[in-house]
Length: 191
Image 1: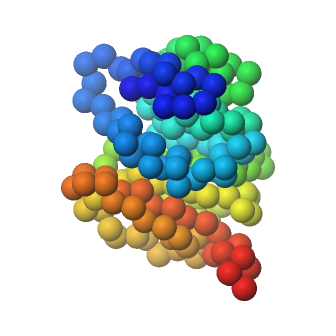
Image 2: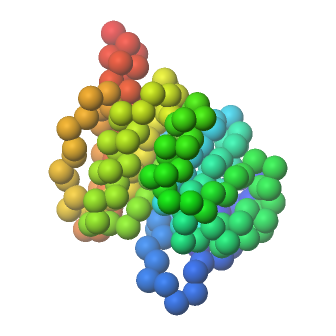
């Protein structure tokens, strides 16, 4: 696994040894960042279920202003990857439970322009995170984008009050990316 482009281009990231990890494939990551394009530059990013920090570090490499990466199981590896990519001045690693950290970030009025959510597939984590973000006030900025990576066969979207799916892309038989924004913002932009 490596950083595709930007200031840390080509940097190889450390991965957990002996784990059955499911990192975002390079082609999916490249497609994701091609879709986002300039919307990464100068943005404040939150990467939950971050694993190695792959998505958050790619965003920083492409010009994001700052990134908070959260994953209880891999905080040490994320910290090492932050050091390898020389992003210590813009990256914060949090090793707590993702849902507890979402609560803390929301309570402290942290707001993010771009949120990546890439949990293990088929265990209900992305749905729970989606609902929490949908019900939060301010965790995602008004013009923010939430990107969820989930299984290609995981199509049951929970009932949402404030967020709306604005795009969905499938990659083979295993993966899809779903993009969400605030309904109010989308309606305003479209009118």
